[in-house]
Amino acid sequence: MAPSTPLTREAAEARHVVGTAAGSPVDASRLGVYAAMGATVAAVPLPWLPDSLARRVRGALVHDIAVRHGLSLTRDARDVLSEPLGPDGPRSLLAQAARFLGARFAVRTLTRFGPLGMVWPARAALLTWTLGHLLDRYLELSRMERAVRIDVEEARRVRQAIDGALARALTVETPTGPEPTTIDDQRDAVTALVDGLLGLAAGVPEWLVKRLDAAFDDLLTHARG
Image (spheres, rainbow, N blue to C red):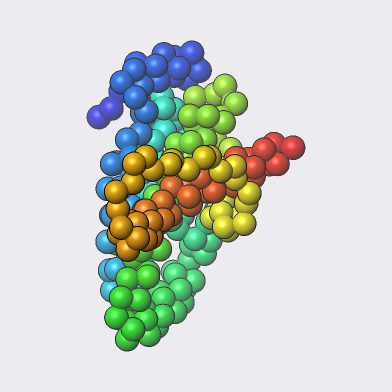
């Protein structure tokens, strides 16, 4: 069992400095593993289980991130952050059953179109990764509260900003840096065109993450008034 955390901000900051001496407290590979687990549980073909398992994965994720920042979560805060349908999502068995039947119908329809059958697990992976990435960003850069324990109101504010960032990521304005220039280019026209298209595709994740971060930061600023 992990040792308990002292309920003082100074103690948390001391632990955080020790944990981050070699880099960020939350490695990108950890988020990738949690995202993969989120995709896996989303594919379970049984009612209630996908949401229940997703809640477990997301709960473990937010706990892991909080601990690595020297913080803790109340039970209600963990519930708000880990609920797959958002802080006010349906928790009753009837609501989950209705959602499961709708999801299975959508998946069955999508699987007729080949690769589109991966949309549901891919969506779960994206949501899980986004939760971890933006919670880590909040704790690393934006948190102002002095308490070590994250309460339900703080968790709800962060969760609403995370969900809102996903909706605004494609419309928010972000500054663009200068593009690198090629020196002594020996490629022919076709090779240069193919390289350019592949490089453009490779830059899409970075482009989306920058927009996601910008939308999240903006929503947190407005939430604080």
